[in-house]
Length: 144
Image (cartoon, rainbow, N blue to C red; front, top):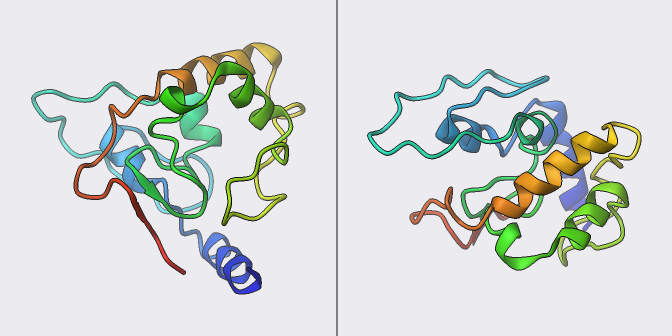
C-alpha cells in the first residue's frame, strides 16, 4: 500500500493522469495541470460528450472506458450503484472505499461544488452504464 501511494504521488506530481484517454475518446479537453489532449476526429457514431463537471473534477483520476488505474473506473457506476451511494461518495468520499484503493485521496465536494452542481454530477454519473467502455481494455487494471 505504501509503495502504491508513493507511486500515485509521483504520478500526480509528474502531471500524469489516467483520464486523458477518456477525455480524448469523449471529445473533451483536460482541465488543470497535465498535458493537453487533442480530441481525435469524431467517428461516424460518436459517443455523447462527458459532462463538463465530470471532465473538470473526476476524469483526472477516474476513467469511464473500463480500466481501473489511479482510482476505480466509473464506466458502469450508474448500472451498479444508486443515487444515494453516488451522492454520499461525492459528499463523504471515505464513506465507501473500493478494496485496493487508498483512503483520503478523493476531495470532498461539499465545499467545492454548489448543491445544484452536485445534483448535475450525480445525475450524469447515474447515466454511466457502459456506453464509453473500450472492449479491448474493459476489466483490466493498471498494476503499479
